Image (cartoon, helix red, strand yellow):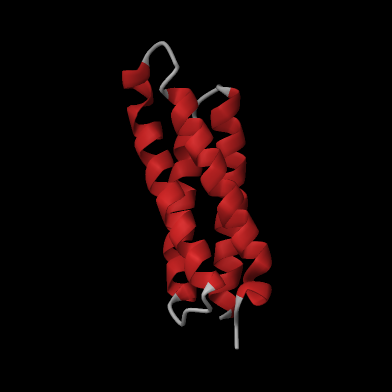
Length: 112
């Protein structure tokens, strides 16, 4: 049976990504022109939510984990593309975490 240990690398990538997405969203709210960061903040929050959901389904050994990870990769890729356009350190860290999470989620969903 596939469970937490099977998916540990991907779960860790998802949880790290979610944490950095939350950090990015919070940091964007502190920027001078918050309105300019609205799309970044929205994608950060959506990506974090999807990463938490994917990590939870993997840790439960859900038969839907692979589908969740494929969708998570899409959220992560969109967030990485948006955050990658901004020069803020928090956005760059988030983009990097999102890219890594997308890679791990793609690997996991393709291997399942």
